[in-house]
Amino acid sequence: MTVLWTFEDLLAATGGTASGPFDVTGVAFDSREIGKGDLFFALKGAETDGHLFVDKAFANGAAGAIVSQAVPYPHILVADTMQALEALGHASRARTKAKIIGVTGSAGKTGTKEALFAALDRCSRGRAHRSVKSYNNHVGVPLSLARMPADCDFGVFEMGMNHAGEMRALSHIVRPDVAIITTIAPAHIEFFKDESGIADAKAEIFEGLVEGGTAILPADNVHYLRLRAAAEQYTNAILSFGFSADADVRVIDHLDSVHNSTLITAKVCDAILSFNLSQPGQHWIGNSMAVLAAVLAAGGDLASAGLAMAEMGGLAGRGARH
Image 1 (tube, rainbow, N blue to C red):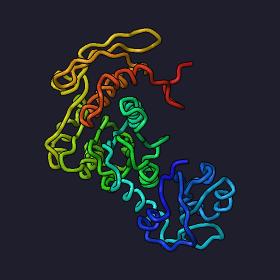
Image 2: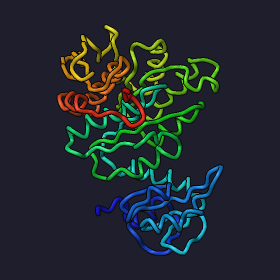
Image 3: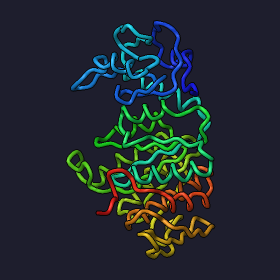
Image 4: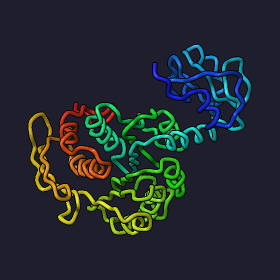
């Protein structure tokens, strides 16, 4: 199996004290997800302590663990395992030459992330990486970064928040080359005075953009101008998407096709692209424009993106028809 992190790199990233050398082929914080050769992070949460599951992790094949208390297995001892996970996420971002895309929004994050991954994985012939499930918080984002192979061409990361300031912290870990906001809606409204507060919190994603990075914004959303003003503080490269006639990447026409798919004709800046979208729903049509905008900004292939969106299967737990 391919080594994901050498012992030397783990030690340099975490700054811990090692019981002995070991290389790892994967990373997890859930002992049930551990496979042969993986690194286990023993994280301490509000309800449980990962150190209680160290035995299970090694029984499942772990090669080593990051711990804050000594264990009778190969390990690196650190003061705080969560800080060590963040440090490994930073190290992964620092070593990669991949184009990194961050995806946030009040809805559509996971679907857009999956479609974008499918598009970029196709054009790079399997050299794309993305966060799995909805690993989009302060634990899931650095974990997803730590799992990224060093030789990827693209990395796609879902990023979520429900309080102001959370997106800022995630964005500075991910440091996206391309940052997408799918939409702004009253999700987690209980933590904000109104939707404009949600828009401001989501717009924190632009604070981590690398120099010359691209912001991708929903042209049809009522908060578009507010989002654009926020993005303009960090980049001059902004692409809008949606149904609006003023959008940079927009739907020209769409009609129902076979097997619940939609035939779409889109204007992608100066190009015209026609493709089938396998996923049903008006929201998917709009978000497919965000995918095309991101593929363009990241230097991917638009034709491959169209083919990938035609062949996408249903996402687990959503979109199934009964």
